[in-house]
Length: 360
Image (cartoon, rainbow, N blue to C red; front, side):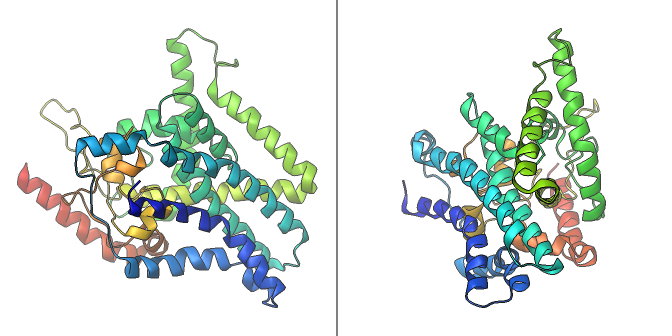
């Protein structure tokens, strides 16, 4: 492994944030304030550290180096470890929610912190895993997604989003001028429904019954129900509500990232009306070094859509891709303030469209 690759271990630092919050409480910090520590670190400190750490625009020097890096087991193990780590952290956070002396503000902070961490440690990691061949990694990805109640992402993302990305038919591609809040609502409502539809179509093509164990959505739903029952056994209705709510927050976190990744970008149609192939020009790219470590290079999203099976450690930076002005943590906060988001991003979208049109 190259020295720079050890930065990926920093993703595990995010899992320590709830423990640090409890540590602050024991040191005398007001529990309702300390409960917000994970959110403060992720959305205030990380953007600042992104600026200080600078950018990484380097790529593997040769195809041979890329192949060697792809084969190294250590990179895979890092993502595999995130799944049991997240499940243990989720159970611990639920238990703390039941026993910590939190008021309404503190309970909101703890719940939001857990959900956002689920977006990082469950959904982001699952995104890397479900794209891979074999059985183990897609299985681990499905378990992680089920723990936040968003197992349909495994199906809709692969068979829907990657097929229709940057077209009006894609629920996960935001329109120019669209508010993030409208986008979140649309995604949370339509994406699970699309997953059920796509799975039903797959089964019909194979002449298999939809209401059977062949239905992947039914299998994941059964696991989700088992997790709900486990949450009830731990904390009765409060535990159940916590488990369900953190899943909604994690899923909403994912949809904000989807909003950022494809905002305003569109694939062109050819003379026959067919959309051009997906390339690195149809997703926003971001090169801040730290947040790319924390997110297993999710921010090199342009290359991911051009080469969906490529593992995170060898994703490329493309200078001619549309470039975000900051990493995802900073862009996340910006997206939550639509007037500021549009002031920053709409001119960038329009300039990029003009540049592409000029090269057509």
